[in-house]
Length: 592
Image (cartoon, rainbow, N blue to C red; front, side, top):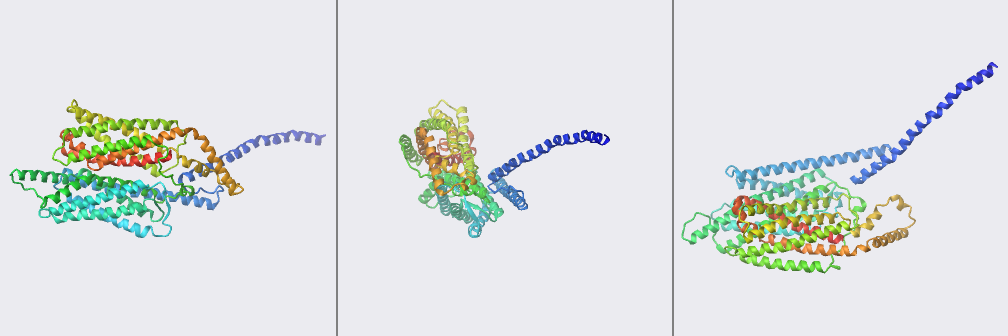
């Protein structure tokens, strides 16, 4: 009985232990479930990080090799960021040093003269030339130096503009040398050295940027970044000097006044040219080509910045095999090209009339009225076209291209930054006109021109940026297939099945977007109209029409030195904006 009691008594004693075991099991199971659920999240985070950086992610099984590889990739990214920071600080210090020299020359030209600034810039050009030579001869010819080339960097229109403006800048320095030689009897021969150095620097730099603007350098990355930033800072200082230095213009104006005084019988101590006809050619050529030097420096800075961003960049396989954009064809576009050609012909007529009148001693007010009336008629049409195109973009069902693209990001920044040039001149003109005599017809036209110019820049920026961020139609199907997991492709039986899938995806895509043909047609018409209008508005100020400086209204209000700096800062940016807008509109047209 006692044994049975013990057994029976032990049974209840054992029961709690058996009952407590299941009670303790659920926490263990929940813990395992949490770990199981957390594993895919960690893997997804690692995959997402690998996609963002462009590097292969670590192995899903956290082996020693996988952890070591992931650590090496992290150190490589940290080294890249450190190299970018150091090279950026180098460029910043060089720009501050050169800016201090130029600012001291402007405000205290006794201690720091223009010759001192030229000596500093000549030293920077020499260092940049040495690095460019080493880059082309040494770095790029080493094994595995350039494994990738950015397909988005250095489009044809950028390289073409680089060569065009570089050639004009070289011709500008040739005219400067000719002008100095014609005054050699009263000027120092040392001044001929600086334009000669600039000719060599710009000629070699143009060739290097034309050939290597797409490079993604993988070796000597820190040296390459520092060299690119040094060259960028040199071009930026050349642009700042061209914007603020009016010594050559004052010298030409003083010589013209001295010639008039000499004809009137008054004596003068101004250095005069030995051959008046030759000097007139050099003088006109220099004044006409002067804006091109600032344009060239801005384009070089943009190209060098893209190259700097691409140093050490590794492109994925599908990015390297980026499908080429379709050729530029006027398929189905009628009204846009016709209206654009009408604007181009009218702009050519106004340009020729104004240039003929500008060759004389004074420009009649009626030619200023004709110039601003042309702009007042064209700018509202461009603004309406941009607003209509932006509305059509909003109605489209094309997906936004959210992939990281340094070239497109730089395009947007340059578009917004270059628009500040003409908009700044417009705001200064509005203040000067309102504060003086807005009742005159010419002043009213200038006021309307300034307001419409601001509106057109804002609307055109919206249209171009919205179009650049839309996924092109010719990229959608291949990119959609490229985003499929590799495991799914590995399960395909043969290449025939993959071809059939591609065909089905293409047919489905065409069927989905067949009802948007009219919208794409309108986008093409608007893009072509805006391309021709921007070419017209680029041509007129680029080749010598500067009524903002020649009408005398703002120059009398702000003073010669202040208005000269404002115009030389804004006009090159305005010309660069029109040229950059043409490139962006071509991309929008091809994407439609």
